[in-house]
Image 1 (tube, rainbow, N blue to C red):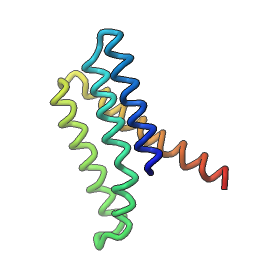
Image 2: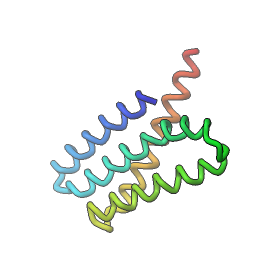
Image 3: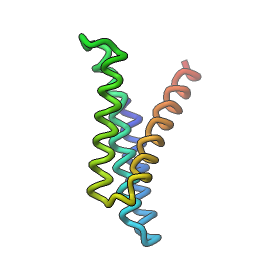
Image 4: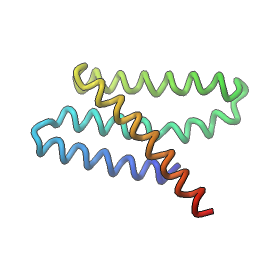
Length: 107
């Protein structure tokens, strides 16, 4: 999970730098925010496993919280960047899945 956060943070910095150089800093910040917010999903899922609510119910709450955080980020960077925040959230899940597969293959 820490690797997911690290990789997503590096990708976030890269997206801000690259898109700022291309004249689109709000999109870079929105994408970066989505990556960072999405990278926290693994930690939240880990704590949900011990929840009294059960994993299914806590998953709904966790995903709702991540979505709400993404929407707040979109409001901060401009509503027109919402798709980029959501793209960052999705990319973070792909990073997490990719790192999990890589770890499983090594084991």
